[in-house]
Image (cartoon, rainbow, N blue to C red; front, side):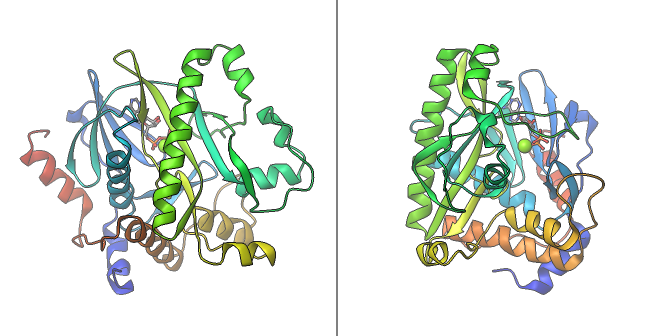
Length: 319
Ligand SMILES: Nc1ncnc2c1ncn2[C@@H]1O[C@H](COP(=O)(O)OP(=O)(O)O)[C@@H](O)[C@H]1O
Ligand SMILES: [Mg+2]
């Protein structure tokens, strides 16, 4: 694990954004700066962190952790999941084929927790078109994974729950494609859970984005990263669950909880600034997940991420 003083030193060098208009047309997402040209997109995963659909600041090494984890996972599922990566010219950059993205995200859950738990308690979980049984307990495991789709909101808006029926009836995705997409999602999630379990982790839930590339279904964006997924430490899950204690979380729920409990912020109004202490704490979590999942030590040179990316893109002829 990178020592805290190195994480602290990196606070000043994080990648807040990547400006390179010569790469094409820019779409700045919450986390990625995406440059499109023709049928290609060059996706730079910055160090930005978002929660409740607000960008809060940057976390040392986060972009590299996410991008490398996505490559790691794509490699693990490439035998059955169609993906669209063409090149990774830098550890934080992927060049992908442009997809026609579905206007919905496929969220699949093995356990009831997080926003679903909050909605269930508030009696608002019916929006997914699912008849939830009464008496579920926080962090309880489902008999089989459950899909709770959401709409993909424009920047600054919130993703909204939607039912599978509304997706198909509303023509957002055809019935045939939706069946194919959810089958792929279930297979991805099964593979993800199995791998996580072999590394002492529980893949609790995750979000997939899919789209059509060259007429075929493809998984796009990121997969099984700590931004798009929840991970818990497997050891002691049952005991903590039985005792009604919180699970040991290695994912973005840490920042959500910090925002809710320390600042009463859950998406409305303007978010509080991140302290350096919480930025370092979160960097540690991201790196810990990377190291646990891959079995590798995370190493990356300190210093300007922007300069490193520019150097790599130049030497590979992108700039
Ligand atoms: N292969 C692809 N084709 C088209 N769009 C893609 C592809 N891969 C990722 N995207 C889109 O690029 C954006 C990535 O930036 P991100 O910061 O994750 O955005 P967001 O704020 O929408 O989550 C997302 O909108 C994602 O749907
Ligand atoms: Mg995204």
